[in-house]
Length: 479
Ligand SMILES: [Zn+2]
Image (cartoon, rainbow, N blue to C red; front, side, top):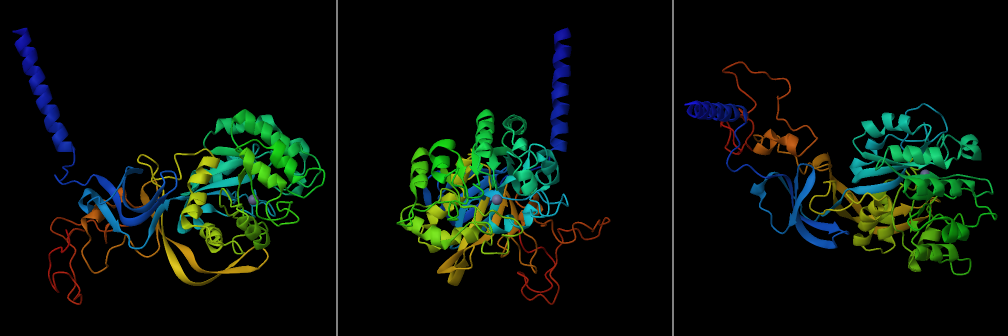
């Protein structure tokens, strides 16, 4: 009897739970598409997976879900058909300055920095590394002001100077170059602080480099060096052959400012050759003053291409010879570097250099940061830091940028809908695939009473002859 009662109660409970669940779970149509976003027919370049051909890329929940030939459009909420376009991982710019907003003049921890979002997503860049604008003393202020509030993924290299890049008075003060507190701050924010930076030092000592390497060793992260003033007391070959560790990064590598070239041939000097053989990475860091055709071309012709392409974005570079990340990449295209290698140097290589290998590739399961590029053909000129140019007949254009699986920039309305047609079904689930406003006309202000038209009751007006069902057809046209 007791057992029967128990059984009866159990059946009742499961029934009511089932009914409750049914009532409170939104019913999905049987053909509910599995993927949020499908990029169809683009030419995929993915250096990590050695892909350089046409593939479809499906995205779900912010991750790359599938890369395959011919994924049906019906499998996705939103499909974007790409014609003559390249699908590449979201670009990674490992040398920028974005510690804006403190109000400090003549300081990269202030007015010399830019806010990231206006310079990144529109150029296909989804991840940037601030290269030492802050040090351990002000990193948390930088994080609060910029890192935590930007749509761009902002990572940081901590300046070995505790105060960061606040000008010569701070940056030449060797007493504020301390490995231990720098390493401690880096360890407090793993995978946000991805390196240690030393820069701009004018003195003859090795203290900045030695403290940076010590901090990098304690925190197990790479060091990036801007070698500052050229001094006979600390020659480049000693930096690259002895002081840095394999995996450390030499930026401004094509400035020609610090003995990068062999005096006789113009090709790579001893330190560059030995450094590369030891596993030092060579980064562009174009900036306002750190990329010279006079250096880059002889080095490229001698087989010395960069490992990573980066901008050194700041207020003095942003409107100068350097325009943006793609512009720096275009310069290597102009020198004859294959597109596949240029893309590799802006995606997978920098991801490896900062040891963030969840980025910079389109493996299934990888973070769905994607740039969709076109190649423009015409007559183009590319200035270096000295207003000397190289001409080229092509340049890259960012068409569509996707971050964490959602559209964040769309230059030519690739994901938009015709204004004079009823919204497609993908608009109803726009939150699955875009950050842009696509909720449907009137959605935000219209709260219909019973009997009044809802947002689903889209109607073409009589003056819309292009309405798919003809003028005055009151029914929604598109399904
Ligand atoms: Zn810099």
